[in-house]
Length: 205
Image 1 (cartoon, rainbow, N blue to C red):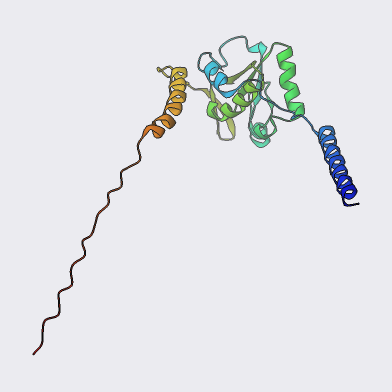
Image 2 (image 1 turned 120 degrees about the vertical axis):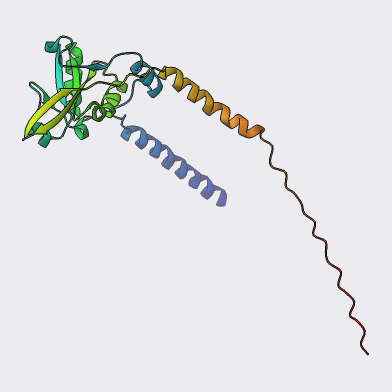
């Protein structure tokens, strides 16, 4: 009887485990947004190509300006023909659909905000998701008497090869653990303290 009960328990546990696996497979959903390009290739490509544009450069009619500032700032003042996609909403389904449509039409999405630095995180996320039809506007936006003032700004060009710097940093990170392994542990010094001999008590009378 005990053997039969043991077999029944094992069978029940096995069935429950299989059911849990099946339910897990049925309820699993693939993430909506995934990166198609890793960080390292993205950085290497970004340092070798020009992803910045100004309003005076290129065919403006082939550009779609996208303002990543919040709705309040956008309504306060924005560039002509720009559409507003605030940074927190950039990955919403309807907003990603806009980027897909622009890519299918071979149009370039030009992102802008208060300055190019504000746009960098949004640009990197979209680029790693496969949207290679995006650029950053070289412009700074501010207000004077509630009027939007837009002026071109210069992007600092690094004379050093950034790609080489990244590769050197990766190599250095791999070498450091090896050096740590080879470093011998410090030798502990043992100091022997000599015990002082007790003086014999002096005799009395």
